[in-house]
Length: 410
Image 1 (cartoon, rainbow, N blue to C red):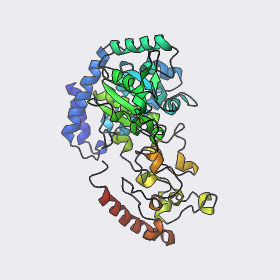
Image 2 (cartoon, rainbow, N blue to C red; image 1 turned 60 degrees about the horizontal axis):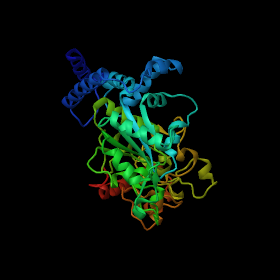
Image 3 (tube, rainbow, N blue to C red; image 1 turned 90 degrees about the horizontal axis):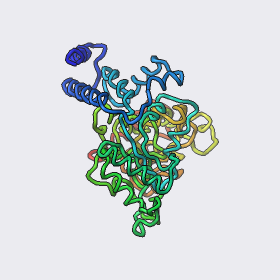
Image 4 (cartoon, one colour; image 1 turned 30 degrees about the vertical axis):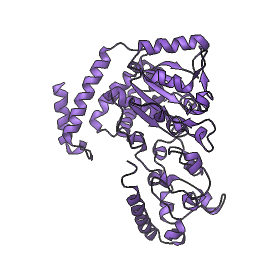
């Protein structure tokens, strides 16, 4: 192990391998050693299933070169220096040491669908395949008393070790009777509390589980809330969006396998590696915003030329997510890429605040994350002909939004 640490030190001092980071060399050396220890312990432990990761890669025609490309991309996504790549590769092979229980509450099952619908096996799907999915209320064959027995056995067998994924909001109205489950008629709330008590960590997946989602939209007849509103005293991470991107689910589990801890979170308990980006800043149409080029109505020349969708209600300026980077549907596209503005589905109360076809400036709601809050015409962007002037004015607008954002969003 000491030889490997020395190798990492050499990589840090190597100009070609140096990374720009706000954390010092000692932080990453300590983390590297911690990850090594963690992986050694996992390798010595009993796997929850007998699936062989290397065999699955071969069976699906994925060679070592492709796998290492994925490892490099995953390492970067987790905001780790390149020298962590061998450890990330090892963690992927040890995913069958991570037992998972998945609860399905008040939702449409869209996040489960996002995991299942693919045009062919990709490495992300294979990683999720070898996770020991001990219980999933939508996918399992068992039902009734058999399902309850399976859940009880999974909780007892992996007590304090399993990751609890929760999909869907929790209806609190009418003493929780809007949502019951199983032969015993347990309410969603009691069901969640019972299972989460013995979990190592809780991962809320999708807009409904994180912030209540569409069920919590006004007038919220069932009293729907997110997981973090009821589960207290447990390590908890939110992976919002409607649906959540499977890549981000893999990233959270990978970080847990690698380090034994959850990734660094923002003020809304979202992993910063996925939600530390403002969609507006990484949007492929950003240049058109800076140049003052907008779609004014559906089907106009601006729409045909992929101009900025802000005037058509795109909420990219106040939404934090990595959609524009990792994309959806096998990384082929994302809403703005197909000509539809962002509706801010990774933000709290998105259905009430963001899901309409007009800019935030035309609504009587202040964007909690700052960003473009005045109309673009007030900034003069819609009248500009010189892109350079547009960039300058936009920089000032962003600076104003940034001041409002200080101390708010992480």
